[in-house]
Image 1: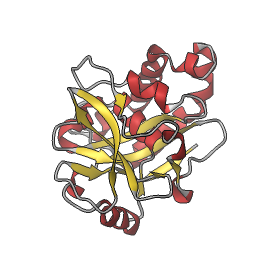
Image 2: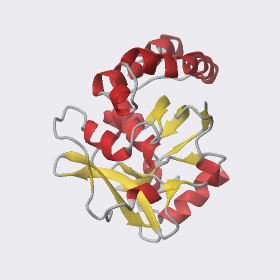
Image 3: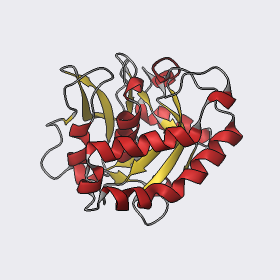
Image 4: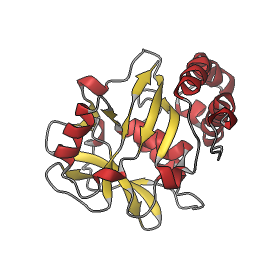
Length: 227
């Protein structure tokens, strides 16, 4: 991410290209059954939207580890790249240990944690943009159910599991000790809320009960989705 205190210095086009290169380098084209060239062509139409919307918002830059904010994230849906395949491609900032799915997800259960109606990704290509992303540390210590209600009242949207993995993939700086985050946009019909936190010096995808607050776990959200 570009570190700047002035919005004109943030190059949204360069940031979009960086995110594409990151996905290609990590093997997302192969996960989606495409060549690197075909994968780049698939996401290319999103570039203009990323630039235009970021420029209109006047993003001020800054260190994501401190601000907890990211102007946009390029998301690849699970229909192209399953979470079981993408989570091990994540790492902590400056770390080497791969991310992992917690064993509290019983076999086959992760696929049941899907986007709710309001958080369903737009478009049909399996890729979309997430804008004005916040990790939501203000909700640390808040009951997840209450945090979700506040997010909705503000006209924002909680992140899905795929979007949380995408945020961590592109900007690993946002996941830091005592500022981890829930992904309330994916649910499976019970009281479990997926979340990303740090375990054994690596990112972990787990879940917590919607009625249980944690001092180190906030609620990630975004301003909009676009395909």
